[in-house]
Length: 123
Image 1 (cartoon, rainbow, N blue to C red):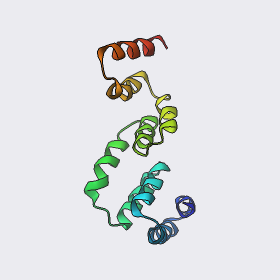
Image 2 (cartoon, helix red, strand yellow):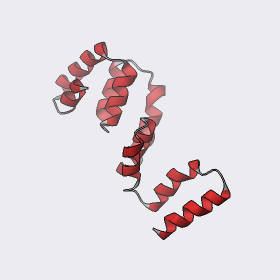
Image 3 (cartoon, one colour):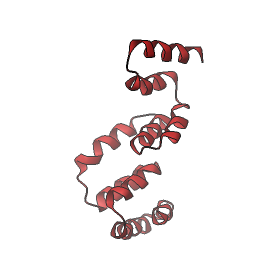
């Protein structure tokens, strides 16, 4: 979305106008996801506010993300947006604790858990 890219690097008035215009052309959820994928929380909030999204829908998620280290934050965003290649790039830059936390929900049995933890510890 070209408008958001320009808006993100402009003054606040131009950004606000670009977001308002983009909301006329694009589905609000798509625009929200594009802003989120740019990792620009100010832009995400602006899109959400101008689209009149319910703050209960997005604020808890954004507040949770803000408390995380940058690469883990980006990992969570990429997982949310189903950008798995980018998610792997970001989680690989995090510490072992974050990697284990990210992997554990996908481990379905004790054997797999033992294998994965053993493999991670040998790295």
